[in-house]
Image (cartoon, rainbow, N blue to C red; front, side, top):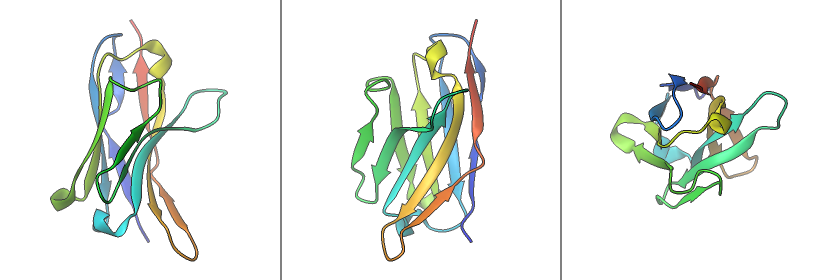
Length: 118
């Protein structure tokens, strides 16, 4: 069973920064894609940033230029650096790991709360 443990959430003022971490219980080389999703109250969960095993990254339009996803293979950890935070970034942020195969295997962390408020 794969475990993904997020950390780094908290309360930050608008314009501030946070770095989220997602530590996996096994080598992240085994995942085809890892990423961060978020879910705000009353809204559906949405993708924020994804990174493939080949280090190709994609971002939601709302976070482009402000957020950066990266991975440290030696530490089996994926990061999300969030800068210039806005109140609309407030949400629970979830780490995800995907293995493309038969069947597709999709793993989620427990989530970490990010609140952007003055």
